Image (tube, rainbow, N blue to C red):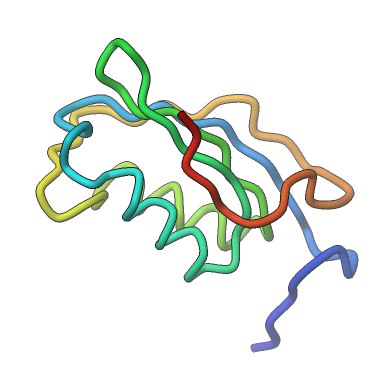
Length: 104
């Protein structure tokens, strides 16, 4: 199986997420950033004032799918995810972000 990266005509997509549950104060953002970088994705993640974590992930569709599963089922070791909402999923011609960052 060949690795497709960058804008080499691979099927790139972007998705916004919001994660509900015990996801603040449990290193959720750090683990999300680490997982995204490990998968070679770009994006950002931040806490909201209503106790959720929001962000955006971009990259090859198969890897974004893997990240969505991780966000909805796994998260950081001490987090407890009750619900994951994904929206605005769309195909993009090229990555609109670079790296994976925590926003404040």
